[in-house]
Picture 1 (cartoon, rainbow, N blue to C red):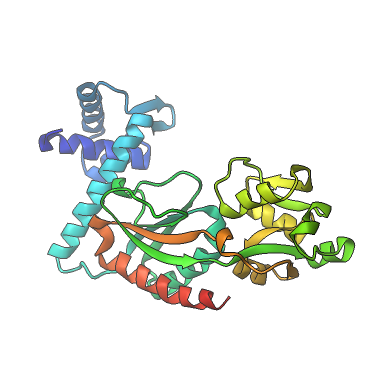
Picture 2: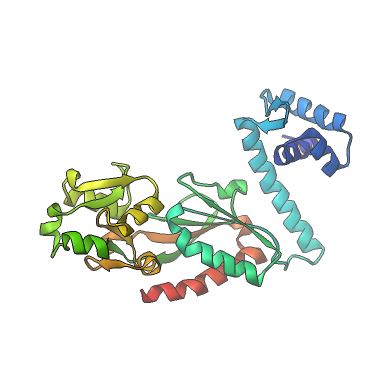
Length: 295
């Protein structure tokens, strides 16, 4: 799309961000009729509806969300360029968007909170879930991913950490049922695990292959529910040593195995990797992670 349509894209971006025509008009310093004209022209040019109109305002359609991500990335890059040109490129401020799996919250939230204490002008957005947020669209500054090394183009990928993961039982479970001496006794016990029978997590795959299905008696797609169930004595289950230490009241059933651990990777997009904010956070995170190696 030619750059002479940038005003229309910027208008659509602000409508999506704010949710109302009047709010976007205020931010852009234009009349609300101009905002409507820009949206109508852009939708006609693209041949798709970018917004659902309703009484409370404008909600982006799927196509509108796609446009919003591209416009956000472009706006971020313009802001960084402006900061460098004005000599303010060394600020650690604005939004810091970090994405990972929800199961890693216990590792990253304390780090993000402490980073924010050192840099109070930072606004943290911590995005979790199974969906991969796309760095090339500016959806996040830093991703912490698990498993095989990410291979998306234009990303900078660094090995980060490998959590020791093993089976734990609560003190209450051990008192009521005892603990297995080795894997040959696992069939006599109850287990907590993921609900997805096709989960690619190494420990979940191992458990499916090593324990009869009827022994996996508490299943959940929510990793926090799984951990709570282990703590409440519902069965034996996997978690990291760090998480078990933080929860307390848990007994390690067996030593961690290399095959159960998923390596973690730090992922940044090449356009943002060298920015002061991203570099400052990566250095802070790597320094904090040194303490995890002792577990």
